[in-house]
Length: 245
Image 1 (tube, rainbow, N blue to C red):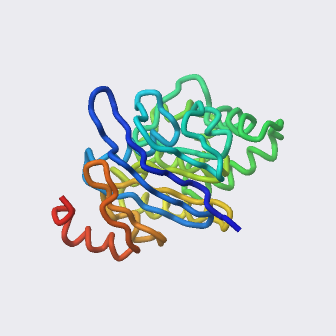
Image 2: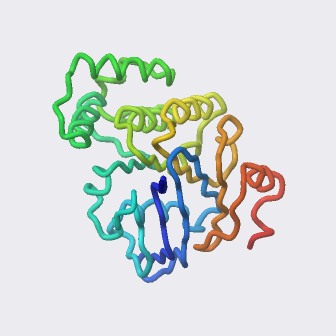
Image 3: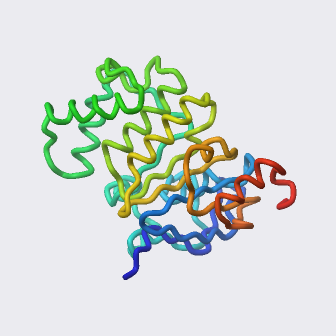
């Protein structure tokens, strides 16, 4: 049985005139946590955006498969509906749309089924309690006036509510204190199952102090130069990226 969820073959991507990804190969199976690490500008966020086919990035070559289906040129909303979620490094503020209404609408679009409001609000409250979030935030405009930590927790809340097959977390740990990182890690562990996968994109190792990754990939100058276990992240923490440049 093939339990491959995401497969990227020889992905080459440009942004404007600049070549950013120079041949990425990656396979993520169900039940796995993968981490892509690398210094700033190495192509980590570009990889995430390319999977979701963000039009700001042009694919020059390569193929992306999700559950065996070629999704390379699908529209972003079609890719999301297939079960890929991406949290943002800098989440947008959306005035006038409450956290509850945003998530209710997104859940409806993902499942194609009407959302039962009372059950849904209870589910939200339970998740927010687990993530040490103020349940009054449910009725606030999405991310408006939220601190950096609240915005990142809100992204994890979205992941738990939408329950995708693949969650891509882009720099979810950046700018967070130790307690907030532990809460984000807890949310990832709550989400994780044998049927889904997580792809964490980061330039430091803090989130791995309270989370067990199956594979760590080092991305330098648009290429994965080394893949290993969580030990690899410890080596980066001690020695940095200079040996791979």
